[in-house]
Amino acid sequence: MTDMTGLNEVLVAVSKEDTGPGALLRIVLVVGIVGTVLLAWFLLRGYKQD
Image (cartoon, rainbow, N blue to C red):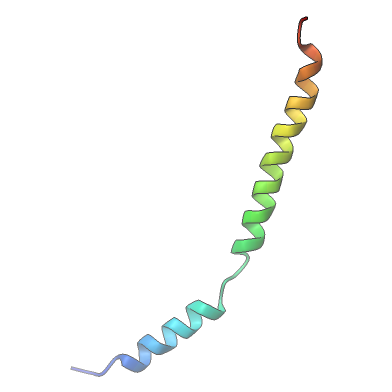
């Protein structure tokens, strides 16, 4: 059986460096969703009947 400790070290190093657009994409999605909810609330509150 071959020794795979070197391969594991390489995979861990690559996974730590390559974060990709994950954090930025999450921030953009959260800000977009919160902004949409606030815009909907602001627009729909004018239709409230007193």
